[in-house]
Image (cartoon, rainbow over all chains, first blue to last red; front, side, top):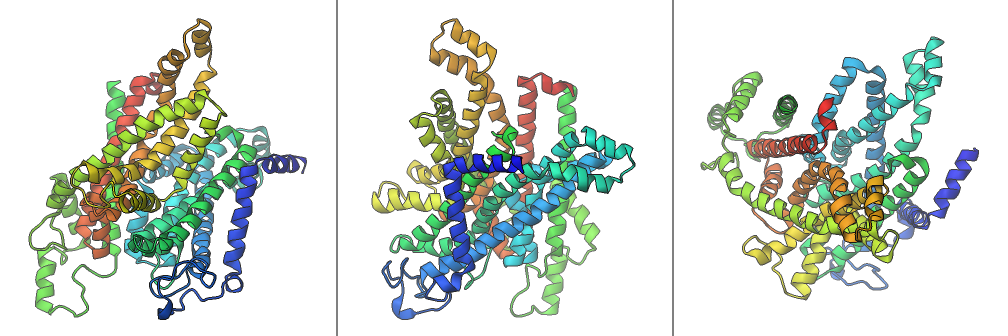
Length: 279
Length: 306
């Protein structure tokens, strides 16, 4: 508990990280309570009010079908944020389990498992994600699967390295000497020491995935209309950028600030939880 | 050293093989073929097409044929351009464009990123350092398509200095190259800074300073040389970043490169083209990693032992 308080104090001292965290909480709350904080539906078309510039009635203007951009961004936050968080959780979970097994087992099991990781690691992950999207078709489930499919690799390496260190520690050796089973040692004696680096990795994985989703949606592989994510909004906005810059400016700013905020929070957490790995 | 080189080359072959196999089977389990249209084709035409592209053979035979063709450097016909353009034609046409774009972006990133990183490290916690590192962080948080939009909005729409698309003269290359360079630039600047800061605390740098050498000599002749070693390892991630970046940049600026073909091949379900481009990327990435490892072993003798 003492350690936790100390960490918390150090995190709070990092003003950029705290401000970023506040921003992320705000975005999440807006997304969560989307129907309460928007006065239009994200898919309601109003052809009489097409491509209106920002005004009091439409804070961020409307798109080419007269849909309120602010509402679309808030509802888009639901998609972008949940895709980012869910895929990060899934890939961190698989990566951690994979890495832990590989590191703990050692020997040829480790060698084979790491060879697989190497193949994934050397290759641009988004290319794999695109191949998965080709197989499964576009849509939100495919995005989650595709991004989780490529995201676990970093975690597997990280956790394996950590496990290799932890398993040589005295308390693990003691547990082994007392005849505790391998799986129990992993869960009870090894995992508790890993949560710091894993949480840091998770924080950095979320913005990576949000960016990947926006990337896939931008090149037309991601979500299909009328569902909107920040990436699909940017794609729609880009096409009309010359005459109606608000269409790309607003989704762009929200996306950028969110990604930046995750970076700052991640940096702050790393300084507190995992100071060794600071690059 | 020769043994190390040979062993390192040998280990990249399974990686490539795994990649080709994976792509092949991914493409095989995709529902719907390239000839599926709203109206079903007459049975004989379908049979002829299947025979022409060997779809009537068992999968293992298709697989060995595919690997055999690859070994001879033949990527097969493109489904999209059935008239006769092969995947080889498309790659031969598009790869130089992408290579130019990518190499220029990496060059810009190194030429700007290394000095920025060194200066940031030298004036640690200064106003310059904070500004540079804030922008580096921003650069890593900006998706390519936003960078591209911002650049086009400023330099093409408002100022009218540079063309907003296409790949013709050097003026049309400026915006795509800058867009693609942003992320590698940010990565290089951050890593160089961290690495120089670490080197500046070493004894030999202190000795150089104690000898009374001037700051720039210490910084650029002594510290930078060692500090750049970790930056060399960044080449792998850099190439990967440039490849994925090129999908969006080429799509955005309508540049006829490999990335644009890959994206349209995916939407068109042109499987041989998808596989061909993937394999080309695979070879590039594996070759770069190999080069990095060899360079690393050459610079740092400790790496060869293992």
